Length: 103
Image (cartoon, rainbow, N blue to C red):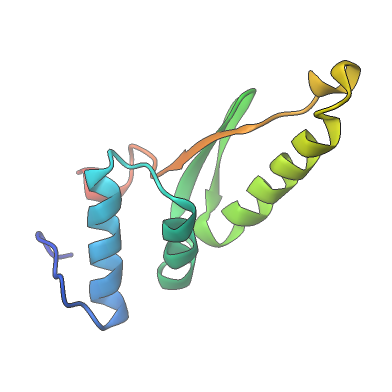
């Protein structure tokens, strides 16, 4: 893995290195666009998804699917105060502290 960012990356390996350095610069937090790119470049890389009621790790390729389920269920209960406490919401997505970029 490279130790500095390549601003003219065209090959997938260099693009992944640049993406991961951008994520590291944001203290590990991942935007929606970065998650989609990460899923294309390193589909099995674990990401940490934090919700209001807990957290879980998922492969980058699967995280958007699980986030969609959480957001869909939260939207369904938004107008129902009785059911709202049973739903969850997304807080953030990040690389876990054990990711190799933090070593």
